Image 1 (spheres, rainbow, N blue to C red):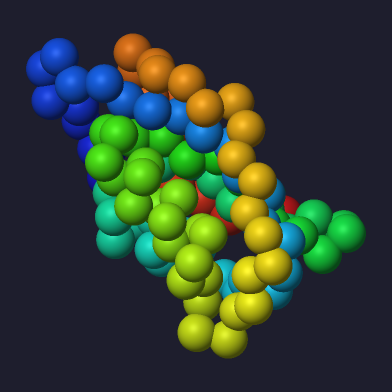
Image 2: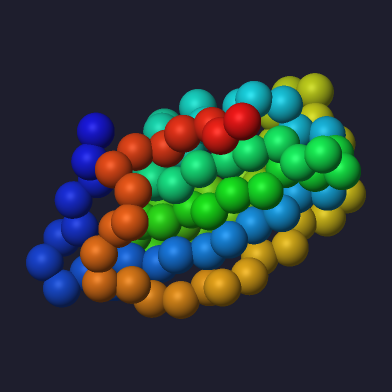
Length: 98
């Protein structure tokens, strides 16, 4: 489901990398919040991805990635990069990449 941006609303884009154990709950949380992007487990045991959407929804997702994670996760730290305002979304949903 595409999350259309309200007219004149700013969308945000942010890349992230989570250090620690975060199981496959990221996609479910993103869909619940209504953000788009992707998530992927890396070979070094971190989780990386990109999130886009209205600013307040991206902020909520960033908070979840920093503090909550999945019920069995342990988050050591989360790095965000390439944070910027965008005029349109690059993704139509949220997916897990392998």
